[in-house]
Amino acid sequence: MKPSSAKAKGRSFQQEVRDKILERFKSLEPGDVVSTSMGAGGEDVKLSPAARKLLPIQTECKRIKSAIGIYKWYGQAKAHGPHEPVVFIRADRQPALVILSADTYLDLMKRVSEK
Image (cartoon, rainbow, N blue to C red; front, side, top):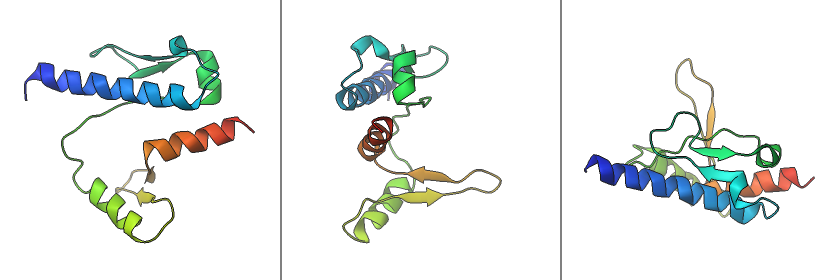
């Protein structure tokens, strides 16, 4: 894949994440959630102070061809039953991480911010 094609994929994924955030948090304006230019330092999706108050996160977006076993593990969790699939992972000497769908994560954060 050409570098320009890879950057275009990455840029479109950042914009997708931005759009998902704006979809769920209706009080935010488009300027509150901004996809940064490729190669810019810092977060991939910048949040205004108002957005950060609702969604206290820092973003790094990665659009990759294959996520090794992550989607296989997610599929296994999904096959276990009707509830939301969640995968807990931990590497040696690293903190535990949780993998869940972006939509589920944003919906949870929206519910938390509305309380």
